[in-house]
Image 1: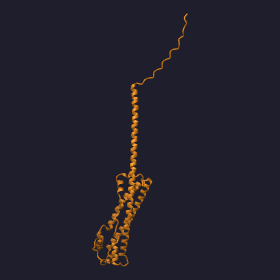
Image 2: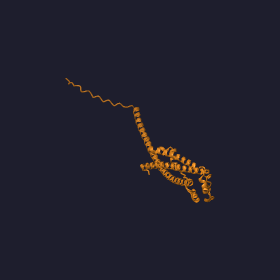
Image 3: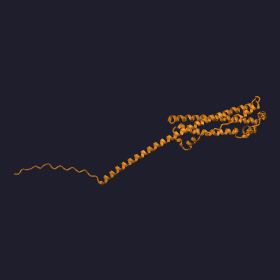
Image 4: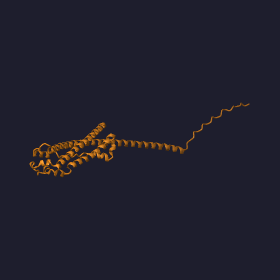
Length: 261
C-alpha cells in the first residue's frame, strides 16, 4: 500500500507590477515642469529688473531734487540781497524827495539857491531797478519737475512765491511809470532839471527862480506823485523781501533735514 501525500500550500501569488505611465504623459509632465521653471526664472528676472529700474529712478529723482533745492536756495539768497539793496536805494530816495518837497513847499523861507540846487542833484529822483533771479523757479514749474519736491508745504510755497514774484515785478514797474514814466511831467514845471542831469548846460543856481517853483501847483503835483510812488515801491519791496526770507528759511530747513547742504 503506497503512502498518501497531502497537498502542500498553494504557491504565493506574484505581486502585480506597478502600472507604467504612457511615454506621452511622462513627456508632457517633464515639459510642464521645465516650462514652469523657465517662467519662474523669467518672472524673477523681470521683477529684479523693475526693482533695479525703480531704485535707480528714485535715486536719480532724489539727486535732481537736491540740485533744484540748492539752486533755488542760492537764487533766493541772491534775491534777498538784491531786495535789501533796492529797499536801501528807494528809502534813501524817499527821504531825499521828502526833504526837497518840504523845503520847496513848506512854510519856512527858502534856503540859498546853491543849497536847493544841491538837493535837486541828490537822490530825490533816484529809483531802484530790482531784477530778480527767477530762472530756477520757472524751470521747476514749466518743466513739470515740481513733483520732484517731496514736501507738500514746500511745493505750495514755491508756487505761491513764483506768482508773488511776477505780480510784484509788475507792480514795481507800474509805480515807477507813475512817477517817472513821463519825463515831461518833470521837465515842464522844472526845465532846469534837464541841464542838471543830462549835460553841462545846467543853469547857475542863482538864475533859477525857485520862488516861482514854490507857487507852481504842477510842480507840487509832480513831487506828490514821486513821493507816493516811492512809498509804494518801498512797501512792495519789503513785502516781497518778507516772502523771499520765508522761502529761504523753508529751503534751508529742507536741505538741512535731507543732509544735502
